Structure formats: C-alpha cells, structure tokens
Image: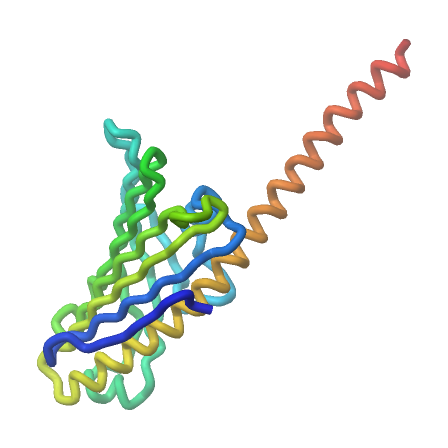
Length: 207
C-alpha cells in the first residue's frame, strides 16, 4: 500500500517515523479537498471530534486553518500502566496551509494533552506527483518522545507502530472520503439537471 516507507530510531529519547503514500488516479485538488474533510470517517473512529479554531487567507492566497482534534489513542493496557494513565483521550492541535498556486498542502499537528509524559509531532505534506499530475504524493513524518518513564524506547516504538497502522487506515479513509464527495457531486448535478428540465417541460406545455 505504501509506495515507500521506513522507520528508524534517532537518539534514545526520540523515535522518528517517515512514510510516503501515492494516491493513484487522484489529482492534488481532489486529495486536498478530501484531506480537509477527512474526519469523521469509519476507518479512523479514534478521531471523534473536530473543531475549527481559526481560518484565514493571507495576502498570497494561502488558506491557513487551525483545528482542535479530540482523539482516542487506544494504547494497550501495558502502555497505559507504564505511562501511568487510565484514560487515553487526548487533544491535538493542528495547523494547515493550503497553497493553491504552488499546489502544496502542509499540515502540522502536536498533542496538547499529556505533554509532561509524551509528545507526538506530525507533519504531512501533499504535492502533485512529479511525473504524473493525476497522482498525488503524501509524505508523513512523526517525531515521538516519551519523557520521564521507564521503557521509553519501547513505548516510542509502540506508538510509532500505531502511527504506521493508522497511516494505512488513513489511506483507506481518504479513498472513502473521495468516493463520498464524488457521490455528492453526482447527486447535486443530477438534481440541477432535473430542476432545469422541469421548467423547460412546463414552458413547452404552455405553448
């Protein structure tokens, strides 16, 4: 499913995950639109709340958005015990920039809960495929740091694995959202055609 993927450890207190995904038959505009409407979806039930905190367009025509995501980490019982928490509901702050001229969509997120125990900083970048404009390339980076607990390297590796699994689900979710949006467009087009035909038919009948 991944066109290219790798995982490696940085210094002992950090874990870095790099993934690359290619969306075939979906141009950048389609994928970006779907990414901005990704949640909620049945593939990622862990994200159960999305609130837009701010949205603006700068002088260069770039769309800036800040959102708050309510998520469920879904950590195994052993990981919860090591960290010392019973609940794993956390809040994530996300900032994204859509540049329609350069055709880039960059998204950065970081957790704002449990920051004294763990930090997860993610960066996603969507760009057109350099050889095929009908494809889109997503690069994803995640930097994980577990603080002040034993077995921190184990926890970082576990969370990195979880992120990789979620990335796979995210690909499926994006395809699901794209299909949903295409269906909505087709339904709107059908409704528009029907609304045009009715007045025309009435006009013909009047004659």
